[in-house]
Structures are given as structure tokens and as C-alpha cells.
Length: 344
Ligand code: TXA
Ligand code: MG
Image (cartoon, rainbow, N blue to C red; front, side, top):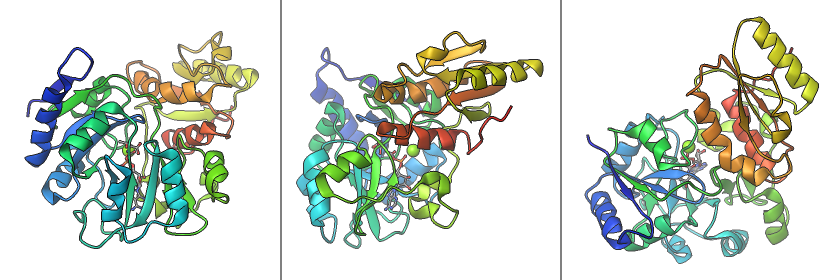
């Protein structure tokens, strides 16, 4: 299969581009497109065969449900049995935006492979002009996971999508780099108080200001039995080829780690804030100012992917403070490192 990449910027007639994507989707094909978080790989959420192509292209386990994207907030009334007041308040406050709400789905509304057989569905309205225009023109719900091969970091540019899925999907809409760089916050609103299943751009604090109590489980302490509540969170994720180790953002600790790696004649890539630029690491990828976590989030996946372009034997990543977006960054890093910390 040849993958067609269509650039969507102010120099092209966007409607011409979108109609090609709409045509593909209506023909039961998959299309990759940018959202404000990461690139998604979409198919019409009622078309079981089209949705199956998403799982196939990504190599995604079939028990991991997909998020359904809508072009208008009102659409969700058609798809769920009820919208609790707290869910409604969050939709008002954060949509369009990086918040996915888990609600009870009306039976037989979506293809069964979208929800992986669950009675609930994850819904979100993305805040990106390309995604929104496409959804509005299509006027149908679109199931879309991140457009990466399963296990790899999510794509934040069209190039990342190409790298993973070239020849496996027919079309990519290239709308430039995504803004946030981490996937949406996934929150279960079928229980009260609501529970954050995956931290993201909309933080627990932001939600508490709108609806009061929100449960934010400590993902490091979740045992095997409770992890699969967001089924996707139990799989290895976001991982470059070389092993990733977490380390405290402490100059001496990092220095000692690099020394001991070099003693073994191995090469090391370091992802850390600007303050670590002077380290002896063989490759350094800056996570920016340690106080500006939004910027770290924006570059994180691109940097993890860039490690695959190096010949590093080991990847060290310093952990951020776990407040605000730091909770989401920490969560993704833990997955990328498979929970491993560096001990000198
Ligand atoms: O920002 C995003 O959310 C991106 C863009 C493309 O919108 N999408 C994304 O999708 O990250 P994906 O498939 O990579 O992650 C979806 C997460 C998984 O952890 C999945 O298990 C969880 O949401 N999820 C989806 N439906 C669910 C449900 N009904 N109950 C619990 N968790 C669900
Ligand atoms: Mg994903």
C-alpha cells in the first residue's frame, strides 16, 4: 500500500484535502490526522471492518479500547446512556481539549472492537483545526488511538507517523507538530467521584477547580489487578529501542551514572532539563527549563524517538516534579522505562 501524505496549511485549499480524507474514511479506510495532543489514526467508529484496520496497522492488542472523537460536544447525547452533571461541567470547561470522558455507551452504538467489548466508551472533542474540520465535514464519530506502532512513543509530527506506519495506511494529513505532545487525560465518570485513569494535559488540579473531588491513583502503586481499568495502561509503552532508566534530577547522581556506564564501554543518551547540558553523556536531549513542564511534554516523545537514531546502549531520563503536567510526564516515563530506576 502506498501512503499518501497531504499537507494541510494555509497554502492549500483545505476543503479539497479534507474531502479526500472524508472519502477514504467513508470507504472504510483509516486516515492519520493531527490533534492538539498527538497524531491519531482514525476510522469511522461504527464500521467494524475499518476499525479492525487500525488494530492491524498498529499491531495493537484487541483488548485495548479506542477513544471516540466527536466534532461537537452535543453529539455525545446520541452515544451515551446519561451524562452526569460533573461530566457535563468538565465538558463545558475543557472541550474542545485534551480530556477523554469514560461514560456508559448506549448498546450497539459503536462497533464492538472500538470498546473492546466493554459497556463504556471513551469520548473526546479534540482542539485542533484539522481534526475539528475533518470531524465536522465527515459528521460521524471517529475512533482513533495514537498513530504509532504499538509500544512506540506516540507521534507528535507527521514524520513520526510515516516512520511507524508508512506502507501500512493509505493517508496522513500533515498539520505540523502537535502542541501538547502527550495524550489526553482519561477520566472515568461512570463512578463518583470520578477517577483519573491516565494523567494528561488537563490536570487533577484543573478538574478539582470545576467539580471538586477527583481521584488520582498513584500509578506507581497500582497493582496488576487495578491497572487494567484503562486497559491500555498495562502494556509496555512509549519505549525506544535501548533500555530506559529513570534517575533523580541530581547533578551528582547523573554524573555517577554516566561514569559507571562509560566504565562498561557503553554509550549513554541523557534526557534532562537544560541544567544538565554540561554532563558527559554521549547525547543530550534537552527537556528545557525544569520549571516549564509544558515544554518538556511537547518535546518528550520526539526526544525518545530521537534516541533510536543514536547508538546509545542506555537511555537515562531525569524525572520531573509530579505536579500539574509533571504527573502525566512521570506516568509516560515510567512506562517507557518499564518501571526501572538507575542504581549506581
Ligand atoms: O490524546 C489522545 O487521547 C490521543 C489522540 C489521538 O486523541 N489518543 C490516544 O488513544 O491516546 P490511545 O488509544 O493511544 O489511548 C486510549 C487510552 C488507552 O489507555 C485505553 O485503554 C483507554 O484510553 N480507554 C479507551 N476506552 C476506554 C474505556 N471504555 N474504559 C477505560 N479505558 C479506556
Ligand atoms: Mg497510544
